[in-house]
Amino acid sequence: MDQQDQFTNRWGIILASLGMAIGAGNLWRFPRLAGQYGGSFILLWLLFLLIWSIPLLLSEFAIGKKYKHGVIHSMSKVTSPGMTWMGFFITFCTLGIAFYYSVVTAWSMQYLTLAVGNVVDTFRGISFADTLQQQPDFLQNQWTSIANANWVTISMFVVVILAGVLMLVKGIREGLERVNRILIPTLFVLLIIIIFTALSIENGVLGLEYMFTFRVEYLKEPKVWIEALSQSAWSTGAGWGLLMTISAYSRKQEDVTLNTFIGAFGNNTASLIAGMAILPAVFALAPNEAEAISYLQQGNQALTFNVIPDLFARIPGGEYMAVMFFLTLLFAAFSSFLPMIELFISNLIDFGIPRKKTTYIVIVAFIAFGFPSAYNLDFFTNQDWVWGLGLILSGFFILFAVAKYNPLKFKEELIDLDSDLRINKWYFSICIYLNLPIALGLIYWWMSQGYSDSPWFTDSGTWNLLDVFSNATIITQWGSILILGIVLNKYIYQKMVAGK
Image 1: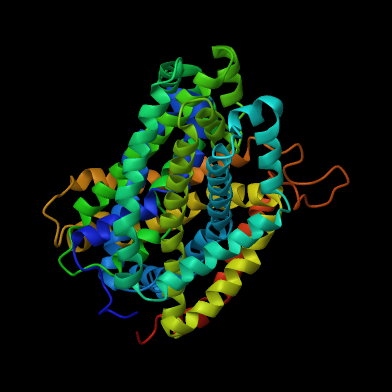
Image 2: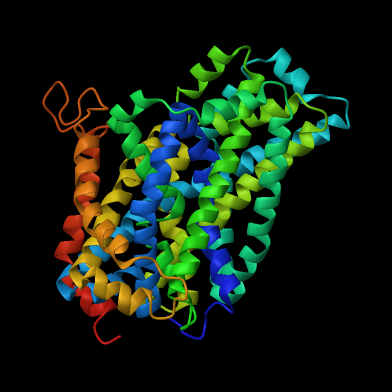
């Protein structure tokens, strides 16, 4: 890894951290979950920010800053040579997400194209509102078409990968830092405009009331807890290894705690703003409150893609606002996608491949492994299911590394060294140890609920690998990466860590 290629100042790494954290998870995933569970989910989500995500992000930032290498190398250094496989799993878990995350970015491009087309149609006297009135199922049909075997989506998916790789092949300073200086401020401005638009519509405020209404009964449902934790991990980037990757390019005197807090709370602010835009839109569009709640609680992946175009079709100048929204979503998704590519590149560099030569490997890998998700929504959903939950196991490995190092010693030597802002040492230490059983307990709790009719075996007695939501598919995919990492542990250590 080229140590001359680092962020020029604090704002460079702060914007990169915000770019990593603020993505499609804020505009696409968070409103869907907040719409299902309301204030109960938000309370747990905030709780897990404090006890799960922030300690993990502090740990990741400190490890990356200390060891200045990719995730596999850094995790091996902070644990031991025999545990290099932990960094291998974290890397592949994040890549598992990155491969299908590029598809979300492609969807954003598709809907941006649709929005721009609607603007063009207005000059020809064709109203999108009239189209929706004549074809009530237009948006649902549009979503079904885009998400399944759509070669335009697949082409855009390839374009997203090529654009991301070509930007990052220039390096951190000329690539990631320069792009984020434009994307992140623009993203926040657009989000603020959208929320005022949604709240100005009749009944829009009912969406806010629903979003922040606390319901005790949801606390009895394990799915709400695991969704809150996984959303916090997903949205902030905790456990991904992404902040570990970004901080490897930080300056020596960088304040670990301050940068982590700005990134974490900036991300949560963006999520709340997105929820405050989309949920009011649902209530404004629904015939009545009951139907709005019923629609939200379906947990539809297409919530953002169906509601926003419908919302803007009903207000003056809405065609232009729709362009603005999907441009925002595209910026958010792409800014988060870039660090995922960099994570892959940094590990390839540790493997001994020059940065410019990593281009071809990254492009081929992303296209090959992302194609099934771009082609089939069920495959996409399965990958979201498997690797979204996998983030908790990745987080467990990082927590284990810090616990092995000794949390109090880790905080003093790696976090506090250049930090003017400091957190209580007992808060950090307790969270590290507390989160170890929480992680394993929540994984067990989640898998014990049986979200598939046949979680392990089919009725004929075969291993239920192909079921989208089976435990069998989770264990098979996790197990394959873990076994591969353990078998290759010595080789990976010698190739990527020893002597560097």
